[in-house]
Image (cartoon, rainbow, N blue to C red; front, side):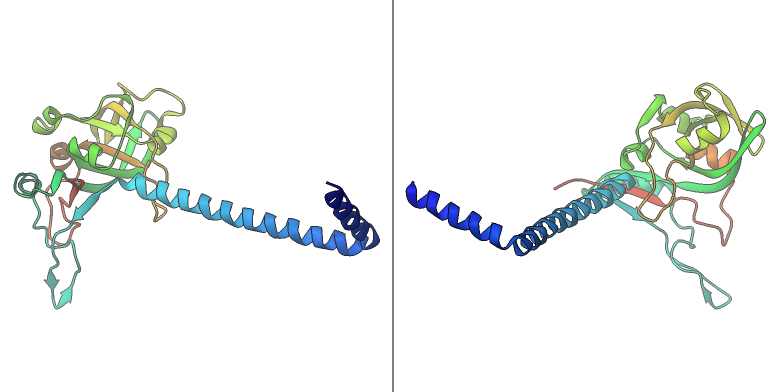
Length: 238
């Protein structure tokens, strides 16, 4: 114990004699440790943010696009052949053991109107499985149903951005909006998703049955348009 006390006296004596050197050494250690902690925290935060954005797209999914076409010698690229149908989605689930769910997807830009307010957004015509594939939660109201798709019901689910710009704090569930002069009843609202990894606002969206979208809003596909039914698929986890 005496040796320990003697060693401590020598150490503190050296520190008192060389005050400037001791202060600079302590400052260097403090700055070094703080820098390491800050870098680890920044890296962990960035990793968590990236994982959150990737998860917001939907987990364990595959997007199936149609092929390309050539017009006047110009190759139009993937997704312009318009060869996919809703039957393909059903066939994938039926015949592909690795696919758990599959949903056709038809999208278009529209102006949505409620009262004196209007907002330009994207409408997505799809089936109920699309919500499970994309991990889309229902905040209020109810989701789309198979009966809605089969009967082409004029119902819609709204994302948070659309709600904020049309309803100004009013509960949208049960209200009637107009899309291309067609009345749609809002049956539910989507839980917020935030931005995608590419910076797209995933809450700026209106979901409706794909049958309704094709018959009432988007219309039949025409040559050179975006493909009518890309497919979103969820794989079976190993």
